Image 1: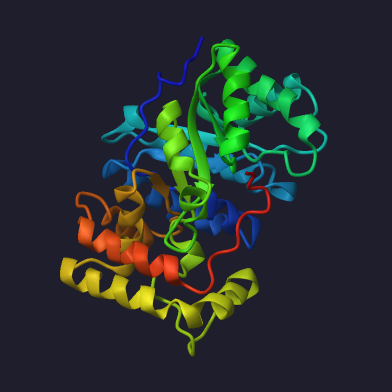
Image 2: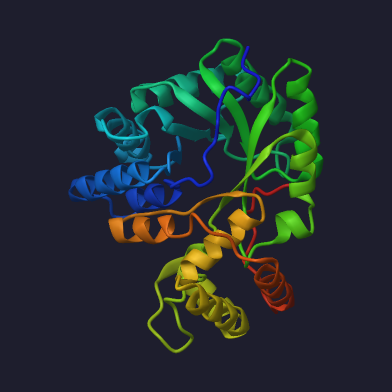
Length: 326
């Protein structure tokens, strides 16, 4: 039986959450070699946790995110090959109603990956709209662990109350929750400061994974109030948040100058300093190199305190994931 301790998570992952969105919006096969280069660069530098999901690259692309990640993993022969950890998330689709439906979903993910799954995660809780559905889906995760089809089990977008409920349900079957993944950054401190998730995770022995640590690019310094903004949801968020977050960006820029780092690296390192595993996306080798530059050093207590103070004073924060529970 898998307890969740059979898997050793590295300090930082290279999140394919960003790859998934790129695949969904305008993906073409010309990107494959660049993405393979990103994967190889990350693994060579000790970044060996890769996070994806069965809902990334769906429809006509037929699970392309998992297929690519599996192909990159199988083709890699360099250093740290034995440390590669593949995590995927299974969507709580409304037609997935039984434990066996989750087992089937994981088997389909493993087939696309062409390898076993190291960490399988519930992509979101159904507590906000169909709480009756969730128990059977968690039972499916338990079955995967009991049958040795995965090395560890994790959750995503759970708050403290729902986390304790899920923890007890899985514990009753001897299954340990290894990880919890939530949106967490200097613009999204809510899961930790208001829900208290880090304290509960520490109590229960669960590693906290921080997705969107760069807040969709808002914490990279590349967007300016009067500059060119991206389209879609990112552009809307920029227009909503940028006018009020300049003090935070100024503080991050000063720390970056003193540290000879970049604003992005400061944002990622802040997540690491808080005891989480950030999974920033990387769609190019340049982005991967910048992410890797967040490793090997730590912000000091004074820097963290100042960033915390300014982040808490901002007039607006990132919108929370609609599936995030209490």
